[in-house]
Image (cartoon, rainbow, N blue to C red; front, side):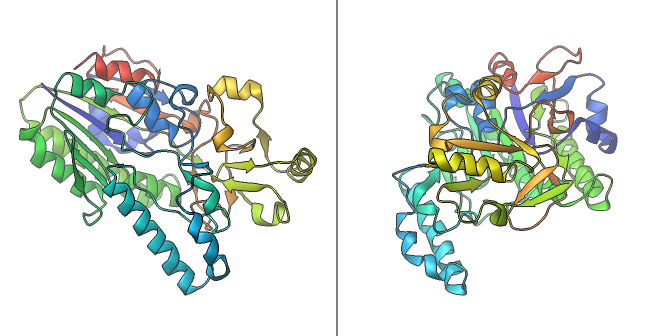
Length: 380
């Protein structure tokens, strides 16, 4: 029996009101809200392994490292904000991802807009695609598929894998329609399918709830899932639709460039958090003083235990987290304001995603994202 695991990026339970086909599916299948892990990149690691960041070691996309692959960019700091600087960043991204491809490390990314002065100190926390052997220090669902010799298809742009054979997809369209169409073509060839549909994430970052663009994006997503179910016809199959997080309305933007100017400590800004590195004891007090009136809180040992984050040395030494609805600018990803953001305390309602599946009993109950690993594994 074929199995489909599909991520509906940024889908919140309340969106069921605007998605008639998905809403219909909830009548005869199990569904509920889905609490995620705290952070960003650690979410993917959690679902494929059933473990928290304290075990997987994955929390944020970038970590501090003495073996950064971007050390040479320090020689181009003076031209960073020129046209030649933009070309330098693009060339760096191309060369970095080409090296990843040549060494069979399938986690592709870019330097985002991390300042040239910081890039020689950081590297992506992930090296391999989620489906690759050894991507985490623990068993993943894809390791189990390999053990059972189950044919699988994995697509999370730009990574495409058919079993263990990778396909280079940078030149393919990065849109949901293309992904679903590709999946439909591959149905006869595989038994397990994993894809991520993320158009909704982009739209919900930039549009308010109830807006026309968001409503259209939800209907488009609904039709994609309907198309898959229609294509399967009367054939029985298993499915898990899940979202990695919800979306919180942004009510305040904080300019950290002015707030933290002149500090000796290095820091990365992840939209909803600020991570400081090489912090001297005397400057630690100065940082706390400057952020005293900023809506947020410092991550202490009690919160690390609550979020099951484990040792975070490679991600920073001092962490300041934004209150829900607060966004730090400029950050690693943007200098522009947005309407919605995620990455806040996973226990707040707006941060929660959703799961919808026929793999477990039809009684509705809320789950944690780490629960889904066992749900998938027990149905293979």
